[in-house]
Structures are given as structure tokens and as C-alpha cells.
Amino acid sequence: MIDVVDFFCGCGGTSAGLRNAGLNILAGIDINADAGKTYQSNFPAAKFFLQDIQKLSPSELVEALGQRPNRQLLFAACAPCQPFTKQKTSKREFDERKGLLDHFHKFVKEIRPDFVVVENVPGLQRIKRDEGPLGRFIKVLAKLRYKFDVQVISSQDYGVPQIRRRLVLIASRHGKIAIPTPTHGLTAPKRPYETVWNWIGDLPPLEAGQSHESVSNHRTAALSDQNARRIRATPENGGRLDWPADLTLDCHKTHSGHTDVYGRLFKDRPASALSTRCISLSNGRYGHPTQHRAISVREAARLQTFDDDFEFFGSLNSMARQIGNAVPVKLAEALGRQLLEHVADPRNHSKPN
Image (cartoon, rainbow, N blue to C red):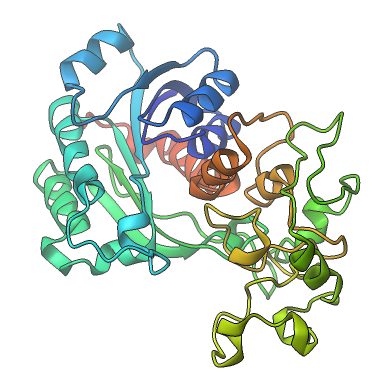
């Protein structure tokens, strides 16, 4: 059995996927109260630390986890990605979140988990190359004699119905390890990519601003009268370029970019990457494929491959933020299965360095 401590766990996308793969979720750590409530509700047996890891010491964590004889340990970390993403709106030179991966170092150095998984946006590896957050972390792993693999991968290659490129690092103290081989793609023997309609097409219809009485979190944001007219003027697979002139925003009349905003999701393709505003019609291609509204919280969760019994808490905007920030469940599950295969290989049964 591999025990998991999920740093920057958010609502629990990484934990959900690793649990599905067969790993034991021991603890989650996050500073967001709404995400913490969601995490605790869905992982009741796990310890939860509503705490800034800059103020949590490795000794406190070890003491809280207690005795774990003959158990292997995985540290998973998905530090907040907003400082490194192309979609950021702030140009602040200093953002304290940029240093959070560096604070993760102390836990790896002092506790020496058997395995480490780090997930973030692809831009992380381009920040000052060798001297950026990822470069510094890789130097720590190399000094501690971990074997690791790091790649930019696509979530849709692992059964996620969403085009979402992520930087993933997987490391082991027990031997060579690699990012799992993609399972989905355009050519055999890979399985076909998952589509939006495969994942949300069976959910009951809703109007904008409604909640479904029996489907958990199947709740949609309200629309202004003008935006209601806009989505009704948007055909299947369409977007703002299909509107009549009187519905076009002034800022779009002289701007040819950002054509996905106000668009409908394509039924027969993976979804566009979900952001923290994934239930807002004006913030991406998040319109429902056929209904006159943006996607619901539950639909967004399904596109992140959360099970329907995974319940989210907080305001509409908070739940959308939790889902948009989450690691897709099936991607985390693929990483968990890779770790279990690694452990089962007799070549990796030696004591760690």
C-alpha cells in the first residue's frame, strides 16, 4: 500500500484519482476553507490541514500522521499555477505563490518520501530555466538521489474529455520511473479521445440560474438578458462570430482574437481547458452544446472526470474555482497506476538510497 499526502490539495482532484487507482489517502493540506470543506467531505478518513505550508513544519506533519509500519509514502504537490499561466491577468513582478514549490522542498528533504508527483501548468518549466522553481526542485531531487521523469503531457491522452496540457514530474527513490504511456489518441491501439457529450449528454436539462433537485451540484449561473440573447443566437459548435451585429461587444468589433469566449462546447470533441471561471459564458468556450446557458458545476466536474458522488461546497464561483484548479481525476489515476506498477516490479524492491 502507498500512503498519500496531498499538498496544495484543493478540493481533491489528485487525491480522488490516486484513490481510484488503489492508493490510500492519508492527508491533504490547503489554505482555502471552501476547498477544505469539499476535501474533508469527500475524504472523511484523511487528516486535513487547513494551513499554509510555509507555517507547517515537517515534524508536525510526521507527528500527525503517526506510525505507518512497512508503508510507502507519496507526496503529491500541485502548487497554485496562476503565477505561471498564460491566462493570468495580473502582471505583478512579485507573487508569493511562486515560492510555494520551494517550501515543499523542506518536506521532501526531511521526510524523504518514497515517491513524489508534481503537477503544474507548462509555463512553470520556462521560468528562468535551471534557476526557476522547477529547476531548483529538480536539483533537490537529484541531490537526494531520486530517479525522475518530467514531461509536458496532454490530459486528453489519458481519458480526460478536455484539452489540458500539464507539466508532470514523477519521482522514485526505488529505481527508474517514467510518466505513464498515453492510453488515448487518434490511432490504434490507443482508445479514441473522450468527448464532451459522452460525459455530460445524459444530465437533465436546466435553465440558466437553476439548480437540479436531485443531481448534486447540477447548478448553473444566471445570465443577463443580453447574454441570454447571445447564447440563443449561438448555433451548435458556434461562437460570437455567429452573432448579428447588434449583439457584438464593442471590444470585439476591432479585435479578432479570443474567439472562444461565449462559444458553445463541441459535442464530439474534448472540451476546452477549464479555468477557474468555467461556468461563466463570457470567460471561454463554456456554453452548453445545445442548451441556452453555460455549463453547470456538475458538468464542469464531469469534464474534470470527478464522479457524481463527489460533492462540492461553497458559492457558485468558489465551486467553479475549485474545479478549474483541480488536477483531472483520470490523469491522477493514471499516475497512481503507474506508481503501483513501479512498486510491483521486482527490480524496484531494493531499499531506497
